[in-house]
Image 1 (cartoon, one colour):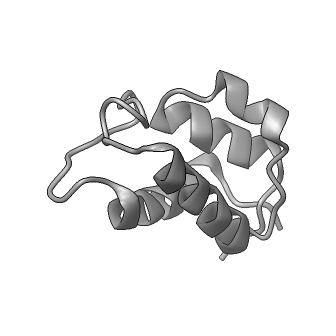
Image 2: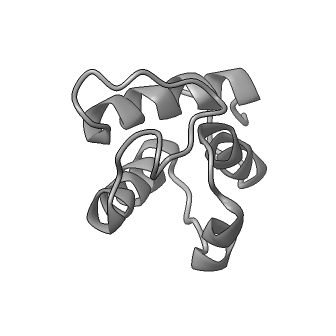
Length: 84
């Protein structure tokens, strides 16, 4: 069974808390790089964690359009993650 968008967002937020700058506050409109202070290494770490968490493979070409937390959640949801 596929996870709902809200479930994806909840699980993604847990992942973001582990890689974002300390005490960073964020919501769906927060930009991953500027808003959370993620550098390229942290983005790669996040991708690996997300792929493991949702049991999906994220194609690199998808990332070109991912700027915000909502963008990432939508792409994950489209890739069909399994419900927890």
